[in-house]
Length: 420
Image (tube, rainbow, N blue to C red; front, side, top):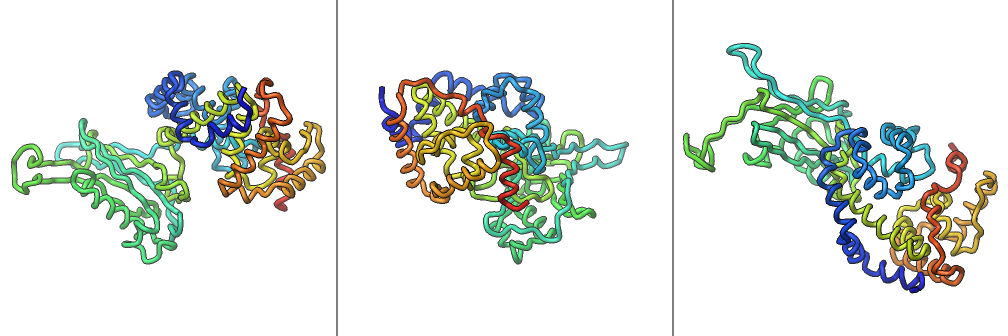
């Protein structure tokens, strides 16, 4: 059998190709296709859990397949969310639950339908959507800070048009004197400018944006009339006249958040929160599923390979030795490299604090921001693992089913360390 180091290098040297091969496997391809086809229909926690196939896929994507049976536990993770520091997921010493709750949040729908005239001769009422929260006097859009959402309107039974709004330092440059202190009026002007720039083929002239008496953004459908491309009455096709009413039950308006323009962006709330629905997170989930499948299948042959791949994935996200100590698989890699025995569940707070200090003194966690340093560390682990273990030993799956040390104890240690 190929040794751990060689197996790891065969997979990691071209991770993109390795993931493509995994994605092409019939079972993986079939489950991913099902997920992509059905996740858009999921509108609540109940919907997700009612579809066992979707739910199992989601759980595996976040390394939680061993907890698939614990639906009451996972329901609490999802319903509590992560907005509050005291939510259930945030109190667990395992960031997999936080990531899962973020991916499967179900933000309150921001949508409205117009109404038909109350009587003969009366106008139909437009569809109006107001933000849940007021805008502060100024909002900071400097640096990497950004808000991004879609405005979507159904004009009639057969026509839906939308425009994606991006608010950041670049897009506010033409309307805000200082993107770090964008006023309410400047934010509304920037949104209206992007709606207008979308053109007649989108929502130009069909939706207006303003600031309500409560200082919250509001969006409202408007009437629209066009003579077509020729600018003359009558005609057909592109030259046909178009008349869109502001209201009536055929007219709708919806606002929904979409992923930010880059992974390095920081979400800004303009009154609709920053949560994304599961459909917007579909690519993130399928990518995570592929990586989890790759790692778990590699681990079926050699536990060391799975540990190496897992550490390589997680290392750039580590902030301190606490992150390592709170994850049994990461701890296994670290202990192997620096020659420490595994801890027991009966360890005292003082002993755990000493171990944190020791790990911090032996491993330069900040260096893991450099991919080359991560690769060097992981290869060192693989070489040591080969020397210490029979590569045909059974995978230690419990390492990936455990969150590490006791959650309350780790939380207490972290609080003590930060002086809280």
